[in-house]
Length: 156
Image: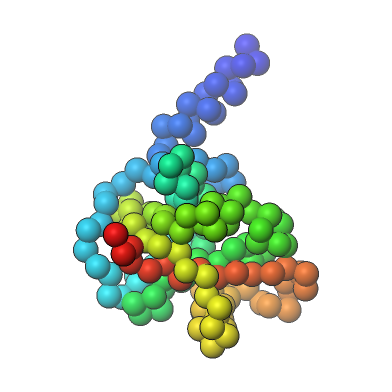
């Protein structure tokens, strides 16, 4: 009888087409967008989105994002979990293959992750994320390192 809840949870995770809460999932389900996006400001209405990495064996997680006009940004953890981005599984997958998919309100977008290294772009994206999620940087663990990825259109 004790296996029933575990099996039920496992079936739920497999059937949902993505992550549930803190539990990662597999391939994201949803309508695939084939149109370019000129303005990502609609993402302001969505607190959590799903990110799918590792195209060969899809792995999906819930994450934050912010859209600034034609640019869409996803941070590594800003508040919880490992303080080093390299300790996040999804980040390792992105470093191996930057092609990913992001699901926003049931629509899946195929993108390529580009780590933001330009200081001005990084600060602009970080401040926008902090404003959207009402995060005070003085409350953050000073040891936390935050990488930000810009999700560009795929070249393929």
